[in-house]
Image 1 (spheres, rainbow, N blue to C red):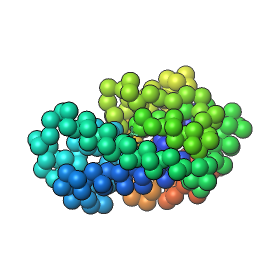
Image 2 (tube, helix red, strand yellow; image 1 turned 90 degrees about the vertical axis):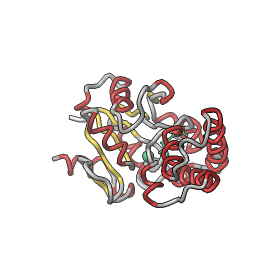
Image 3 (cartoon, rainbow, N blue to C red; image 1 turned 135 degrees about the vertical axis):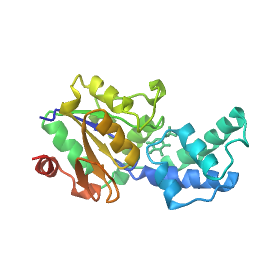
Image 4 (cartoon, rainbow, N blue to C red; image 1 turned 30 degrees about the horizontal axis):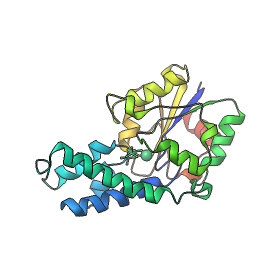
Length: 216
Ligand code: BG6
Ligand code: MG
């Protein structure tokens, strides 16, 4: 039986995947990489520096910048991202998600955050939902980002639960793979996701009952 839920943030709790996309698009234009829907999708769930590498590679620019220049580019993207994030309010919580958090809390489930984003605590604060989470996996302490299972394994540890009692919620293919490799139950949002154990086209369809129904 499930006892805990590990939430991704960007694209699951709020539509911040769109903000990451906007800020990366600007960066891609700057380095001369063509911005395509496929490139945009491949960045979802992926860490800041790994995302930058993917963008440089997509345009054949991976050898055009020193490490120091790459760090400056990543910082520039993050500065632009933060400007967008600062506009967030509780009204930006995606449909169904506040309700799900309340249901899980009221029924005594453990809830932690498993986001790759170093901006996650800030985003939770703007959305005013920090108090739902008993822990946040610190992405700065991970050796490997999604799709590696490390982040979701750490989430289970934070809750003191075995993997098979934990479900992870994701909008990204890299995230679903991370959950599955950690031996947890993957809940995916988005029609194009592959391999999610439980699937919803969008967040407005989710509830504890709807999750249980698909697992039965
Ligand atoms: C993930 C996003 O949650 O966090 C990615 O899906 C992002 O798009 C990654 O690159 C890292 O975020 P940040 O805020 O630390 O740059
Ligand atoms: Mg996400």
